[in-house]
Length: 119
Image (cartoon, rainbow, N blue to C red; front, side, top):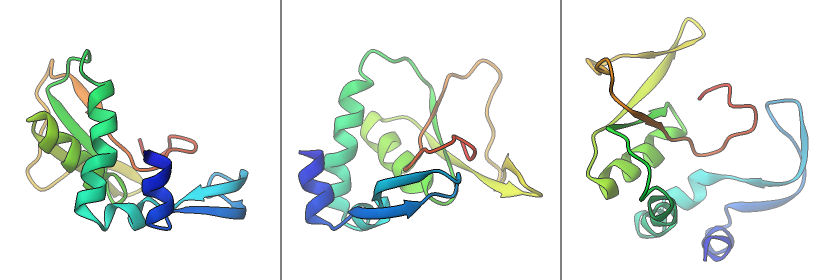
């Protein structure tokens, strides 16, 4: 189902790609092309939510920019709060009055992970 969603939205691209990590790939997923369709994003994220049923967490955190929609939709579908971090002076930081309480269990949500630098 996920591959169909990616292909239907032209999010799955094939060819040669130099990733921001410096690595090369013959495929790339431009998640924004899938996430621009709320109904399709809901279906794709539902697949993740189904895999999280045995994971205990209190809050969903996504890095700006790419992780915002994914973290929002994960939060919406799980009934948990969802926030995001932004890069400031080269480091990801909580802003906009967001906070994480000591002891809260965090689920980090991202659209695409290559090196994990944003996460």
